View 1 (cartoon, rainbow, N blue to C red):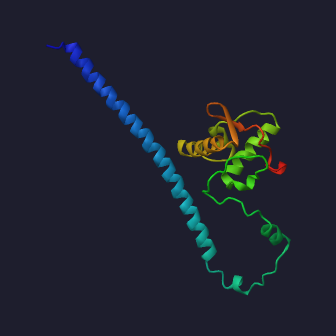
View 2: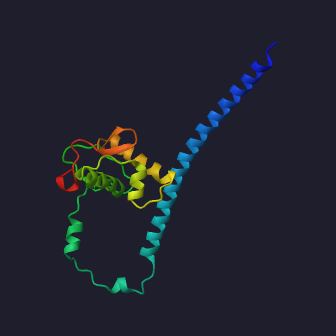
Length: 178
């Protein structure tokens, strides 16, 4: 017959396993919630932009004469490989322009390039969120961490210490052709 202490230990072990399993599930759900929240915010921004474009403007747009200016020439000469939001991150190679990345990724690279130029060292995702004027909450920080990890995996960034990101060797500023 098992002892009372042995039975208590079995119940304690079973409870510990259940707690651990629920914590893992909660972490997974938290990450999924952060991703869904980010997607929801992007759709809300897109809807507001479409509302702005489609808003009635008393016919002013229809009557305006469109003449190409110097600014339009710059827009037309933009590289055709410029990335669209939510696009994939290409693997870094010598000479690949930053314009191949979406604006969010370019922002991360620019910040880290500025820090490298000033010899200020690596940044954490929390520090990046604060620098970008974002709320430093887990959802925002994890979204940045996901982007930074993707840039590491594709060779744009280096993570020499866990959670601390710098430009990868060979990746230079946006004006230097890569």
